[in-house]
Length: 238
Image (cartoon, rainbow, N blue to C red; front, side, top):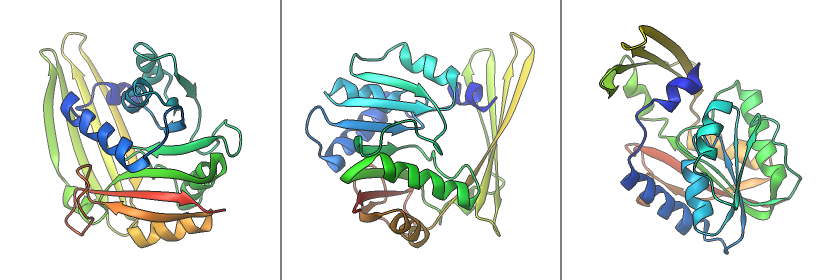
C-alpha cells in the first residue's frame, strides 16, 4: 500500500528536481554514456533526468505501480527493473555509479541494510561511485510526533505522522490518504533506520567502499549537525 501513497505524496517540485540533478551531475562527474543504477528509483524522476542527459540509466524499484509511472515518460537509454535492493539483478562490476536518493535506505534491520551495501559494492566497477542521499540522523528526532496534512487535489487529502524510536534510531512514517470522491481510506507505514556518519563509514568500509565526500544538502554545503541532509559520496576501492 505504501507505493500507492508514495505516488500521491508531496514530492519536490520541478525546480528542486533540477537542482538535485545538477548536484548529481557535478558530484559524480561521469563521462557521457556511463552506466548508472538508480536504486529505489520510484517514479523515475532521477532515472529519466539522467537518461535525458546522455547516461545509460537503470532504475530499480520493488513497486510495480511506481515503475509503471516511470515508464510512461522514459527515454531510450533508460530501463526499469522490478526487484529487491538486497538482491540487485545486475552483473558484478557493471555500473560506473549507483545513486540512492530521497531517503530510500534503511528499510530493514542492520544485517539486511548491510546486505544492500554489499549488493551496491558488487555491481560497481573498481573506483565506481555511490551517492547516498539521506535525512540527517541528528535532525530526524525533531520529527517525533510531528503531524502534517495537505490536499493532493480537490477530493484527496493526505495525512502524515512521524514517530521516532530513540533507542533504535528508527522513524515510523505513517501515511493516510483519504479519497472523498471514492469514499476510501488508504493507510501505510514506512519504517526507516537512520545511521550516523561514523556508522555509515564503518559499514561502507566493510563492503570495500570508502567515503570521499560529504554534503549537508544538494547545494553542496558542508555537512554538520544542523544540516537538512546527510549526503555521502563513496568510492569502491576493492
